[in-house]
Image 1 (cartoon, rainbow, N blue to C red):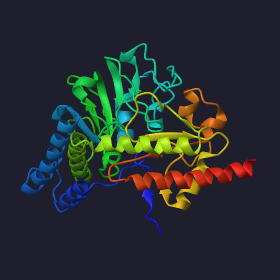
Image 2: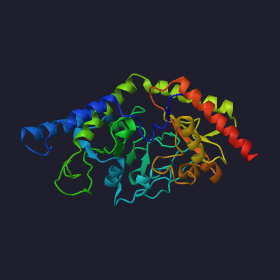
Image 3: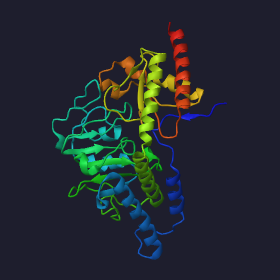
Length: 348
């Protein structure tokens, strides 16, 4: 039996060995990072080492990083009470606090008339479309972009940025809000005043350690060109899909996208049905964002790009990562093509 192939890296990347080792080592440290004794100082040293690793990988200052339970909490910390404009392609964690009414074109690009009053993602989780961020943007969700493409907070031109550990091979349940120097936020979780008073609660020392190690390893992978190899596999996959099924639509193709993401659209063939067929064949893909897949509805992202309901409901996301092979990709296309042919026979 062929091994299973994981093609859902945008939902959660496999845990990196470096992160696993850092988590395991941190779990052996007893102290509370807010305690002043030796054990507490040892825990604090782990947190601050991770902060340095993350700051270096992000091109940010150490004092500008606020550790959170994930990008969802970081979004709440950055956006609550601000009434910022956004586009309907944003993640639900951002749309929960923003308008969702900025214009989106057919290629997935967003028009931002007033950057200082807006939030905009750097890359979309479903289509991989990468935005050109306007100077002076209030908040940027870089959750999908961080670790997959070169970026530095210092040159992105935004005031705040959201990131998450598990999208780049760190543990789940930890993220960060990055603040431009001089920017401040009102704490939503109040208590002991941890994270420089911006986010109370004893730090998740093990999770933070894993985040720092993953960020450092991700920066190394980018420098070594691993994601350029992933882009070649993505292009191979799309060429093979179009060869097998020329009427397939690939959302956002032709513009700037993440190197690993393909959104394949077959109108009339439910994305959920495709996901189940591929799962049975040994491939993990998704029918959109992991936070919304499983809900039987058309993709909000694709509808915002101008696709009709049938097309938006007939999409799957295939997201790749380092370590996959040409054989993995071609076996997926072969299995998907067979399932698509069976669907066509039933629909005829």
